[in-house]
Amino acid sequence: MFGSHLRGARAYEETGVETGVMNADPHQLVAMLFEGARFAVGRAMFALEQGDIAAKGLNIGRAISIISEGLNQSLSWKADPQMADRLSSLYEYMQFCLSQANIHNDRSKLVEVDGLLGELESAWSAITPKRRQKPVGLQSMKSATV
Image (cartoon, rainbow, N blue to C red; front, side, top):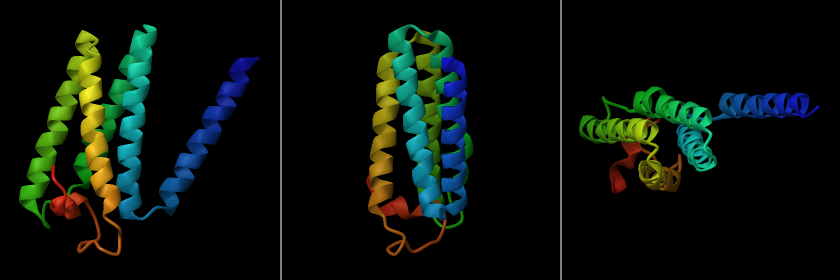
């Protein structure tokens, strides 16, 4: 009985995300990546607390994918190679922490990554599209402390 409701809720959620992505500008897309990564890390923490190892691993994998395939790929190497390099190194570190959290069931690593993502998300949201000098990527975070 509840299974069909859960499938319906997931389909509704996926449609909402797809609609948001299709209507988002590049700045909003990066904001959505931060939100998605933090959501996955939060779900991994909850799963770890509940002893649901499969869900923990699945959500850590999602967070790693968002960081590596989304955030890291959105970096603008041409606009600001030094900032892109620093952020890429930070994303690599976050992926390492997430891997360690998964292997060792280490909640503190999940908390650390969530904090780092939160700081970056906050800095990114403080940059309005009107104030950005370049149209795409995280190059505008130059003014933010990373």
